Image (tube, rainbow, N blue to C red; front, top):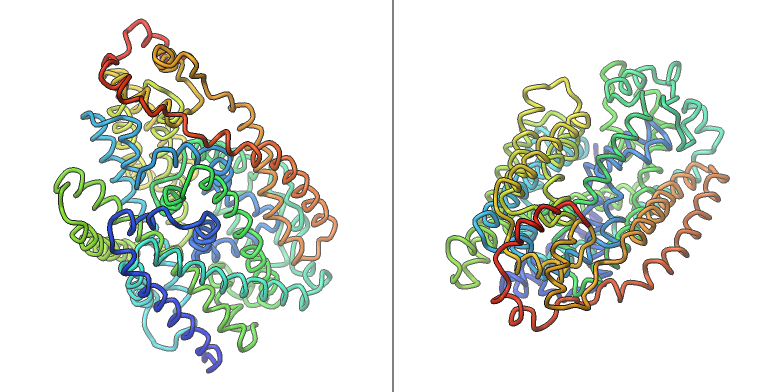
Length: 629
């Protein structure tokens, strides 16, 4: 493809500005580890929310979302639940508040808050680091496949998609390595402005150039409704016959079963809290627990509408102007090419440059945020904790640079081995996260889980997530989740019950500081010996109600821009009304309650009164009621 001088100028200008901003803030980032990884907890919640949203607006995910909207129509709004996207609601309602109360730098360091510094705690700490680093490698490979395939269509040099990925990802790593969290957040705000402008432009173009009558010539019955029965209810015969084959390969014909599976695993993953990646780093970087909750609310506001304007716009243009070419591909149809082909063949000069700059910005956002997470775990949670706790800050920051480069190279190696975007997507969200879920559910809600149980649950789950797809390649990744989760759950429970509980003082401090609801009655009784007025968390029912309302609020936000671009006026009015009603409810049941939910509940004299007087373990008589509330 020959890109015009105007388009090239837009792209070059963006990269010059982004690189310059990253370099300008690098001195501030290099002060110490807190500054490098968390921006000194000085960044406002709305800026971190924009940054987090920009990091999620990745090019590989956009290509996948265009594919599922093209094939499954409005029913595709449920498919991102496989990640699950509604984990932002759980974070918004209560989990980000619990997480931020820990006042730590990384997810692995948080383990000390829950398990102390026992042998089991050290083992669990290491298991979180292992999971975090494996997931970073997986996400680098995920970005690798998307950016390589995308770039190969637009750039004129005759090199492979994988080599394009190496070049672009190496370039992006420069400012992320140098500037840390400050660089990532500042440049992501710029990237979000570019992304939003490009998204609204492409959505508006699709709305004005494709009429409802024209669109309906290329879609099957049932495409324009998000509702479904046990079967998918879509038949592409006579339109693009190969789509039926693709749906069968995806395994989504029994859509009711698929929906139940993604809801089941999604709720479990969401109650476990954020994985130790860039999403968690944004929560820990906020200035307070209240701002952490607001940040996750704001992510939904700023991410969903512009992203789905772009996805809907690209899909509608592809249906109207690219369907004949896709039909001609026959059984070898590649839906991941829709996004780049529409940009190449349909968009006018100027908008091509703007959209390419936006999509490259999206890639840079997600990738930079991912690689920024890796050194936090290697340097802070391995080197500083176990090897050299008294090194100079400059040494830690320098080692962070080296670690980032090493993980980029490892991610490249795995990227060369992965065959498709869908393959790595399903492995990350179903198999790998199945190994993470059990340990991280129990750490919040069951007092008896100890460091040994957490460690064996994580290790068993991670091992199962790697072995099952290899040993049983015919099992879809989403169907592997229950097996991986079950193996991990057994590891958690057995590992905990055959070893001693954590010390009373550690459990009591965690319970008073974070104040989770769940199975904590034995610890509450211990706390009330010292603080008789301390009460259990009373917000369980309200939090559950807000989660349900929040999920309806979020899915309304997703459907609205799709209905807008496709001219489905009745559906658009319905979901807008749903959004307004749920917003009003959340204002009174969640937003107005943030102060009381976020207040510090750990007494200032806890260490003096409890730490040196509490027995090491709860007596056996109380351990026997471990599962009581």
